Structure formats: structure tokens, C-alpha cells
Length: 224
Length: 224
Image 1 (cartoon, rainbow over the protein chains, first blue to last red):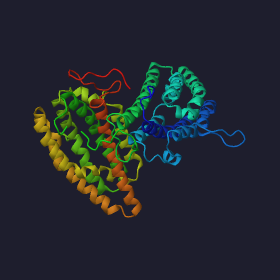
Image 2: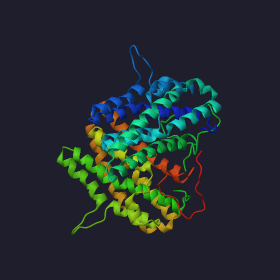
Image 3: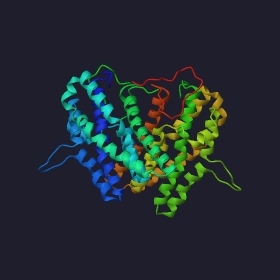
Image 4: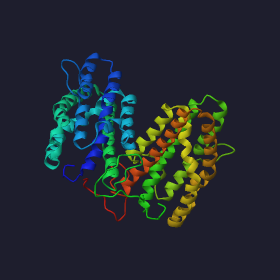
């Protein structure tokens, strides 16, 4: 992506699958909210849900999910097709379920820690916006999602790291929150590996998944 | 695999990850057992757990899990390494969790139907044993797992298909059990795709996962 090697179809596959991931994030945060016993914690954490789902009324504003749809539309996908999610990779669904399962079943502090991949997102998003603008200029007007995350993510991460720092008192708790962050990295990594497998190399989308249309590369008929 | 193209290291990766999958199957069946209200159903279904976990005492016999370990050992892996499961792909764990989740949360009849991939396993296992013997003769003495499944799987599948046939009364139930079987196929398919990605093409195992040793193919240092 950052080297400009992706076709429009590959960017569509990414946007479609990543939309599914985005769409479960507010549910993930609501599960954490549902397990938080401290109203002060809940008041801070609920901002994440507002950031993704947006706000209606006088102070109406779009949320991250609508911004992501705008990005997916800029790749050439229909909004309905993206929102239905019928064509996401099974691996994408499994990974979403894994993340929901993590915040449902693991110790509360681990759930908070699992969000800390955002500690690293400001630099990555800055680089990504620059590279997307450079290599895929037709996406230029649809990068609002990333623009918003540049300020939202560091705020969220600053709160979460402080909370984990204050509450992971024992060595066992500290090991546990580090493991939770590792597990979250595995989730994100497995998502990208599954996309790479299906749409780059060897380029075999499983039955029922989104297929790239109108591009030079033929879809392989035989599997090894 | 069936064309003899796999290296010993690739067969190790397959045996190691597939062991993890095998190891959760009795837990999956115990979850189904825990949801079955009919003792007659439970008496039949518990056979699956015995088949995998074996039996101690006078009528001692090994179960499928020990037989799979024997296969993994024949590829050159240590038993302890296989059983610890530390080096399985994160995708393998996610897929195991997905299957456990399915039998925990979906309608009971769907859980029974999800086992029906075994309807097709007799022909596949017959072919697989023939091909493994032909291309990887050093595995020949370690195929007891497959040998046992040749009789176990058809018995299990015959009961399950009859049960689903008798109980899926409405069109909605019939659609639902078909979807459950499709979802189970997605689970098995995603497992193979993740193995292919990590150990065949492009051949990028994620951090912490099993790595193939002592073979010609170098491990790529850079990701695209």
C-alpha cells in the first residue's frame, strides 16, 4: 500500500474488509463499557463509541464508520455492498469475533490494554495519508477517517496507557496486559495476512468472498 | 500434499497446527453434549469424545489425539512441542475459538449439522492415506489416526445426518443447518489458507509461530 503497488481492486478488498472490522469496534467498546464498574471510567470510554457512531441533533457530526464508508466509496464500491458485509473474508469475521471474545472473557485490565495498538497509530496514519495521497490521488478527498483519527487515537491511547499503568500492580497483571496487547497485534496481523493471501499472493479469495473485477490478473482456478 | 510437493518442514507445520485443531474437538463435542437435553442423543454423541480422548482401564485404547501426536512425531517434531501449542499460528487459535463459539451460541441443530463435513471424509481420507504413503513413505507407520477415522467418521456422520434430517422441520431450520455446514467449511478452509500463506506462498509465518528449519527456502525478512 505504501509503495503504490496496489490496484484499485486490491484497495477495494482492503476497504471492504476493514469496514467490517471498523463496524465491530463500537460493539467492542460497548462490551468494555458494560464491564466497567467506575462511572468516571465509563464517561471517558464512551467517547470512543461517539467517535465511531457519530452524533445526531444540534451538534450533529459523522462518526468514523461513515467516514470509512466514504473511503470505501472512493475506491469505487457501493455503500450498500460495503455495509451488507456479505463479501468479507471468513477470516475477517473470525478475527472480529476473536476481538469481541477477548473483551468479553479476559480480565478487564487486559481489555483496556488491548486497545493500546493505538499508541503507535499517529505516526502510521500520518505516513499512510502521505502515501495514499502520493500513490492513489483519487482517494485524496476521502481521507477524513484518518484525519479524525490523528487526534482521536492519541487521546484514547493516552488515557488507556495511564489507566493500565495505574492499575497493573502485580507482575502477573503486568505480564497479562502485555500479553493482551500481543494478542491484539496477532488479531491485526492475521487480518492483513488473510487479505494478502486472498488478494495479493497467491491471490485466492475463498468461495463467497469479494472478487476483484476488471483487472489483468486472472483468478486461479486450481489450488495446490 | 497429495502431489508430493510438501517438504518435511511443511508437513511439520501442518501436523503441528492440525494437532491444535484436533485437541479442541473433544471440547467442542462436550459443549454439544452440555446442550443436549435427550439422554439418548448424549449416549450416542459421547462416543466422539471417547474416540478422541481414548479409554483407560481393561479396555484401554488410544484416542485420536494420541494418534495425531504419533503422526506429528513421525514428521520429526517433539511430542512436548506439539502438545504445548505455543507455535501454532494465531489464525489456528482464532479458528478453534470460532468453532467453539459456534457450538456455544448457535441453535442446537446447527451445532449438530456443523459436524457434517465428515460426510465427505471417508473418500478424502482414503485418498490421503494412499497419497501420503506414496509421496512420504516415512509417514507410513504413523497413519493410525486416519485408519481409525475411516470407520469412526462415517458412523458419526450417519447419525448426525439422520438427526438433522429428522429435526430440521421448517424451511428456516433447513436453511440454518445448511448455513452452519457452510460456516464449518469456512472454518476448515480458513485454516488451510492460513497454513498456505505462512508455509507455502508467500511463506511468511507471523511472529512467534513455528518456523521451518534446515531447508533450502530462506525466510523472507521484508513484508510488502
